Image (cartoon, rainbow, N blue to C red; front, side):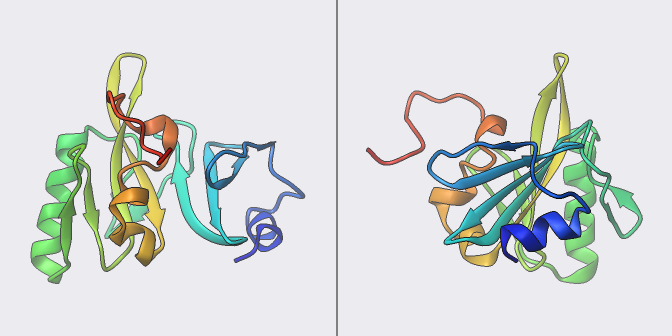
Length: 146
């Protein structure tokens, strides 16, 4: 999808903020962050609290205890035969669905945060382990090449 198609799908005329940075990023109302690669949709990150709720097999992915959400994904993957991937920050992904479950700190509490990522970004350690930028725990190393 193009940025215009994303705005149309979200039923808004434009994003609240154009962030810039190493990826084309647009922040929309209600906790939706969208990242583009060469002008096409590559990643959608939902805020754990203010973002829209997303259900997988009836289970709410946003705003949950991360351990409970991870256990659900493990059980789901076992039942459905889905491929799993753990990332360096202990996030868990269902690679065949493009769902990456990160955690986000909200008021001193960690909560689950779903991130939807296109396949080649999910397979790339460079992208997978660093988006959304504000949701990654701080490390000594910069996530972006110099």
